[in-house]
Image (cartoon, rainbow, N blue to C red; front, side):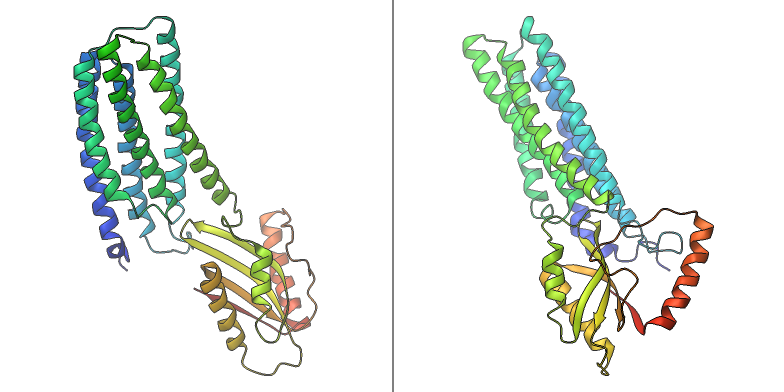
Length: 331
């Protein structure tokens, strides 16, 4: 058994992440040193944000490694959810760093401090150029991957901060308005905060087994019922294992008079699920008789684990005698 089976598919993505991590590390060292030398809060804030970029990119790379681990008898879905946890951590760090920047800026509103605008400008310009290159390397990988998108947002946020620092440095150089430094810090912190909230919402939605973003379960059911001999769909569950893997389970009521091959019905449903909704992991149970629960969605009842095991065994045994059905699992 290969520990990193399937990792080759992500080689380009992982190389981009490692390359971006090295570049952001260089930016961090340059801006941190320049921030202390110039006494610029905006530049120091940018340096700290770059540090969170490094953490974000590192977590994204680590999540790729873990997601390549094969499924086991204790982790039947593998480690794909590590991508979501990494995105959650990244979102939290964005919120914290935004709050830190705003707090420091408020302190400087009442007592603006002089900054060395030339050094501030040079360091910010360096950070801006390098970050734009990192954004270019990561762009395209963030469209369907929440984890990469959170890392991408970190870097985009830093591009905005670097641009703000440059503008602030120019204004301070010509006017001496040192209050510009904290004002711009607050503005760009709010931009970062908005992106962080979106990432946190999406990550939490996945962890709470929510229906994948943009998916209408009524549309899913309508498409499934277009398959010949399918009469109804009930006990439907749709969720995301990770941003790129959607899963579905359902009971399918078929025509009792149907005598053909059931695999054809299953294959037709799965084809529609993948092509129309990108649901690539499904478990479908075919039935010819009434089910105990006929609602489209149903509650899951809490019960003691050992008793639940016995109950499921007895219920499955009885259900198999009452109704002719097939349970088919598809990828």
